[in-house]
Amino acid sequence: MKVALLGGGGFRVPMVYGALLERAGRLALDEVALFDVDRERLARIAPVLEGLERERGERLPARPTTELDDALEGADFVFCAIRVGRLEGRVVDERVPLGEGVLGQETTGPAGLGFALRTVPVMVELAEAVAKRAPRAWFVNFTNPAGLVTEAIREVLGERAIGICDSPSGLCRRVAQALGRDPSELWFDYFGLNHLGWLKGVHDGDRDLLPELLADDAALARFDEGRLFGADWLRTLGMIPNEYLYFYYYASDTVAALRSGVELRAEFLLRQQGDFYRADGRSPEDALAAWRATRREREEAYFAEARLATGIDGVHEAGADDGGYAQEALAVVEAIGGDERRVLILNTGNRSALPFLDERAVVEVPCVVGRHGALPVAVGDVPPHARALVESLKAVERLTIRAALGRSRALALEAIALHPLVPSVNAARRILDAYLERQPELQELLA
Image (tube, rainbow, N blue to C red; front, side, top):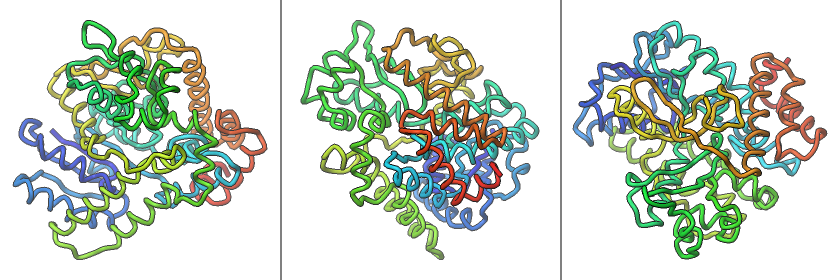
């Protein structure tokens, strides 16, 4: 089996590499190609990977490359995690809307749309290269905004493009822990779009356990989402939202927290990862230790703006989700490669999972995964407010894809203006103008 990892010099690559090391024997890996356009980043991440190999006493048939065709040729699985515009672009994405009093977050609000506009054309080009060089490969997309990007590349790759995110599975694990249950014993009734989903039921075969969890203040206080949203609001919803719904339900509170002087997530990551990548000449052991320390700090600061807005003390429960998106990706590989028929929450074509969306819309729902890919499970009726928000965001996603592929400034403005977090057309116009002024990739796209 050959795995090609696009974005092979990225900070999260060691997570994927470690997951591959754990499964190297049973996956029968013949080659792991690490592709990146930046040779220096590949060189900086290489000793971290070597440190992992020494620690575990295992090696992978891995090699770095800056040649895309070389990386893709004959691949069985393609993992993709790229950032068009780098973290410097993300800083602009998040800082500009905040100047208008609008939430800016990597995948949410106008910041997510700015990121998507410059990312979609590059991702479609990559998908076309995969279709040419590795037509039988499964494309496992980590690139954000994951659902929107996956919908764009499915126009090229069809059912072979699958989007992953670790937020839903992390929520499910935390809920199971709060219930004192093993998550493998439960069915999680989850629905929505990427970073816009809700858990509406937790079934053990006999009954739905969610109502008793929602009635238990102490149990809700034991995990992040319970503390973020608060017991009263969760009982009002009758569901547990994905953590990113905080930015919709508490948008003005988050903006106030961010404008109080807290460091933006993008600025934190740019500073922190810049320090990591500037260091040179480390031994594999020292490089691995430095990467782990950087990752730990990164995870502990996750959702700092939401915790500040809510007044929650402490750090993110990083230990609860050690598997991360790397484990989600490898679960897809094992399910498809071994035809194991696992149930995973993935981003894939709707078919009829959410009956109010068309069959081609990419949704985030439980799927039965085997050698034929991911088959979404029917979700059925959902609460009206959730349906309205999903329909609204899906329309905005599709406008964004059309704007990016059609190089249309008018459609880009329409997408930003119609986003539920943007208060007016004039605010949308100022945000887009600022993006065009400060984002070279976007300026070129929408010239």
